[in-house]
Length: 120
Image (cartoon, rainbow, N blue to C red; front, side):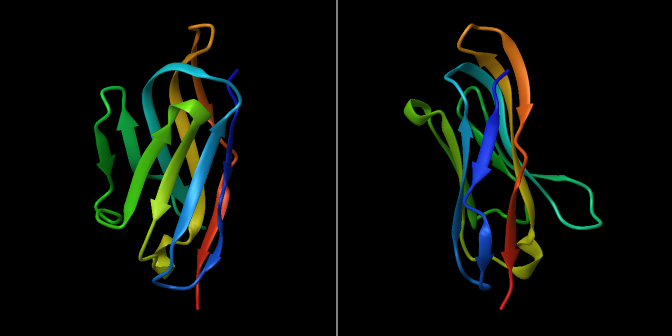
């Protein structure tokens, strides 16, 4: 089973930037969807951004123009560049991948999350 590990979270001031990474434990042969979600205390997990197999990206309205999702196939890593951060972006951020592993077996995996705190 492909394992995902997020990193790059931390404490940042409003208006600042962070880049989250999501590293897969092995090469992903193909994917149907790569997504970043977030969950703030007391709230449901919500979709932040995603990439589908054709390469198209989509973003939640509340991050459009501020966040960018990207991937580096050679590094088996997905990124979420977050700019102009706001206090309401404070949450645990999770990555999710639905695809086929190096043996062409289907899988779905979630990372354990990385905390992002935006505060002055």
